[in-house]
Amino acid sequence: QVQLVESGGGLVQAGGSLRLSCIASGRTFSRYAMGWFRQAPGKEREFVAAINWSGGSTYYEDSVKGRFAISKDNAKNTVTLQMNSLKPEDTAVYYCAADPWLRPGVSRAASEYDYWGQGTQVTVSS
Image (cartoon, rainbow, N blue to C red; front, side):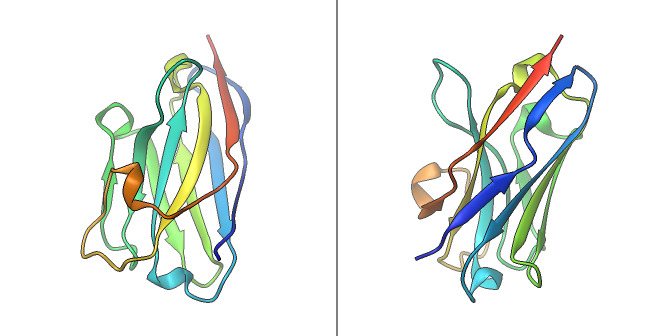
């Protein structure tokens, strides 16, 4: 069983930055593709960004391209989401997720991620 714990959320003004981290338990983190998803009140969970197991391939939702950056440190069992130029519409609970199936690329489909963290709140004020 893999446990994921997110941290780094908070309240920030529009235009500001936050850095979310997710640390994973277990010895096989290097084999996991990792994703970040978010869910705003009254909305469905949506894909934000993903990185493949090696860290060599990344994928972003269009609205965050150029503002967010995902990275993976296999030595520290950690995936990070650097969020810059934040907008009020980025307000949501952010979840990290792990896909343990060694796919060649990355997926934006929540159904392909087997393990999820508890989420961390990000609030961007205007």
